[in-house]
Length: 475
Image 1 (tube, rainbow, N blue to C red):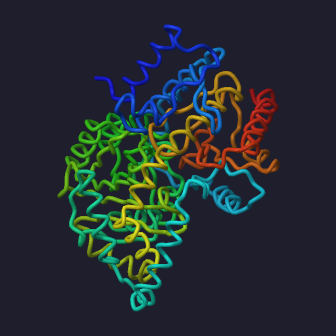
Image 2 (cartoon, rainbow, N blue to C red; image 1 turned 90 degrees about the vertical axis):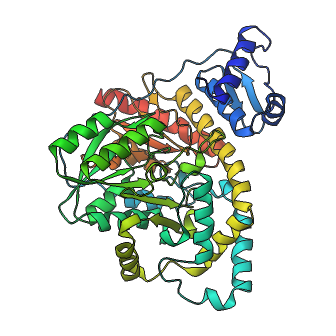
Image 3 (cartoon, rainbow, N blue to C red; image 1 turned 45 degrees about the horizontal axis):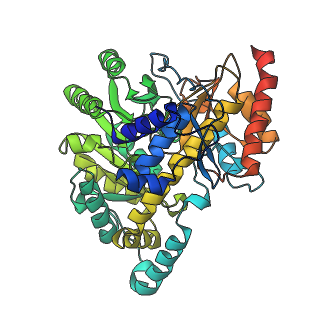
């Protein structure tokens, strides 16, 4: 059955094929088409992005969507991954620190770190919320909010989770310093040094750093760029290795952008429950789907199962607020104690500010806007990469989030590309940092949530030029 955005895209494609629009013609504006079809703006943007990926139309900055003079061929998706079938210690993460430092350098074009540019964030709303929190909660802001965290914030998070189909009590939520700490607390609760943890491959390098820090071993599981972790491969791994936990980002994973279908999520929950394995669910991108409906969580499928749900506002509100949370289930006493031992508490003022943004509706209004912004950003970046990069380049087609995974042709070395691009003032994320075994040497991740201006477009042209010089050397 076709989704709503596919229906809209099909109607537009038929109009194009019938000659209603000629090359160079501007297509109906997003808001206008939304009203005409009685669908959400996010649905229209997703439909336009689908047509753009087909090479039929193009987005022009601050102008809208236009029919291409010559349709551009659709870039192929990367193939499902095939990582080594054995647990291993994490290596090769030193480059990540340099990439993080580069994200603070205003002279560097930021295409590497998955940190949204300030233009995507509700800076003024956050500023007002912090100011008002300091003014109206003078006795609270100076005090610790010991675990589990600010009651008002936990109530608002529980309300949002319930609206997404995952019913938890506010007392089941523990506030953390971002999702990174939530993941660390989750793995500390269910593993011991030397244990094996199953992860998607490629996976978020921050998770690999946590695994390394805790003395664990990562077992990379083959992953599809659209549907996520392979349940068949995971089942074989569970029969072969003493896996203690499985960490998955089911909704718009980083770096692939994959989104597990509901039946796959149910299969994952049942498989891990059958083997008595803890599931750590990272849902940090769940609110950022381009469609109108939020995808469900694994936690909602098994409220009483051994699922430690982790979330954060870093990708939606602002990474600097450092507000995340974990629903640790049966492990809550241990998680609360470890949180207290590690850093006593999450800062109070950001908790108050986020609670106010949630209660006042500013978060929901911002979310509706930023989902459209991210959909357009991914579309623009994908189109530019398709037009500039060498023939044979493969690109993922995420339906949420703001990163794309680019598989480069031949034997191009992304570590060398990252080094040369940094010398040109351009930051990218090379593929090996997303793998415990340093696979994906011919892949890069690009963040699309960057300021889209002449400097960014020149940076992509520079990357293409560097690729053309690298290709003969390594092919």
